[in-house]
Amino acid sequence: MADLAKRFPQNPILRPADVRPSVPGMKVECLLNPGVFRYSGNTCLLLRVAERPEQKEGKTSFPIFTESGELKIMEFDNADPKLDLTDPRVFRYNGEHYLSTLSHLRLVSSADGVRFIENAAPPIFGQGELESYGIEDCRVTQIGDTYYLTFTEVSASGVGVGLRSTTDWQHIESHGMIFPPHNKDCAIFSETIGGKYYALHRPSSPEIGGNYIWLAESPDLKHWGAHRCLARSRPGMWDSARVGAGAAPIRTAAGWLEIYHGADSNHRYCLGGLLLDLEQPWKVMARSREPFMEPIAEYERAGFFGNVVFTNGHLVVGDTLTLYYGASDSVICGAHFSIREILATLN
Ligand code: MAN
Image (tube, rainbow, N blue to C red):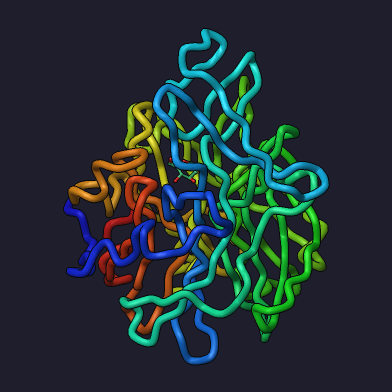
């Protein structure tokens, strides 16, 4: 199938050098996977900023937050046989897993949706023992005047989904972990259905089961239940290894359109769509057989972790979907799509 993305000619629109490190001594290594929303007449991106100290020859170092909230630098010798550096994102030392960078969230805003500047809002950091390895890939769902932030919380205890909320981006309230490990890729629907809140989420089951998209419902956005599995990875296809929801689904006349990412066993990340029934969102009516966006541009093929297009944020105006995405886990990009064109490819 054809790649349906009309990529911004200005891509990449944000690179690591465009934002300041959060503290002296840290280097912004990657910008990834932004949440997207409108606030005060501007387009805002909530970037994931991944940092670590400048790397020294023969050493691997990365920061973590201690339980008292201080930044601590861990350093290992690359020649140490207990160190496994095969994945640039995650490495193992003596059987323990660590992230190679520490991520926090940073707000940037734009009048034209293409040129973004850092916003005066304070950066959003991980806090407490469940976020000691950082927070990542935030979805932002606006309900009324409140913005709900669902993001990945990483710590030695595992990877789960945290919830925070704000109305002004200055004061942010934390509601703790809403989906315990292993879970990520959580997107809250922007409307209630039959009086209930709904969210997509992605638990991982290591033996029976896999990395599948699930649906949950809630009376209050904090307590989630009635879990149902909506979409599994598909052997032999582009989404054979894992699938995960992007941002909140888009209401269309045909149903809720969810843009999701799928990866194969080579960790190649592409985008596809799922169409859910408007009244009974646990009913999947159609799905992409082929991805409608693949990592084909040079900045999507090579970077910190190449062959990745990953989205968790977009804006919709009429038939136009403006999707913001992380390319090769390094830079931020944008693309326009016709929603009608995407729907026409689902079956
Ligand atoms: C994971 C996510 C993303 C990342 C991709 C590709 O699924 O945690 O943060 O972009 O991997 O590396």
